[in-house]
Image (cartoon, rainbow, N blue to C red; front, side, top):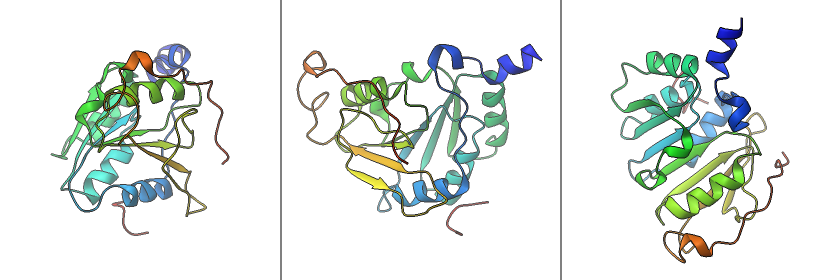
Amino acid sequence: GFLALSAVFWSTFRTRVPLFLTNKATARALLLALPQDRPVHLVDLGCGTGELLRRLAMSRPDCRFTGVENAPLPWLIARLRNRNLRNVTIRRDDLWSVHLGQFDVVYAFLSPVPMPRLGRKAAIEMRADALLIANSFEIPGLGVDRIVDDDPAARPLFVYSFAGRPGRNGRPAGELAPIPVAVPADAAGLIAE
């Protein structure tokens, strides 16, 4: 019992990020929110069992997808689930150790607690032309560029771009204003089965 729970919820108490799985409607909305005019490299921070990455990779074979998962059992499931997809890489790692500057799109379905820290990390590390897409939870103190919430079955997606924002492409990180405590947001056929 305890070992099985530990394998699934490995770092939940430390990170305050439970295992959230992206539903099919939200996966479809995310697919449509990706840039359509070029291939992208997307990272899923806390990819869980890798089902979202599998669906995206099958729908967009022109893109590359990286999943980062710290808990052993979801990581293993994600590795096995995506082992035959050449455009998917699954890493067992802590999301905070991953440098976000190497990705075109960063996707996160975490919890309200780490969102201020993620916003600060993104502002420092992400390229000006990159997107951060947060599922369900806004990043307080960082103005959202677009909210994707057209489908009532999908969770809201908060889309942030970093062109002209302070951080890597503006002031040094030390000059960034602190980000306040997080508050939760209110809140067919295109995706491979």
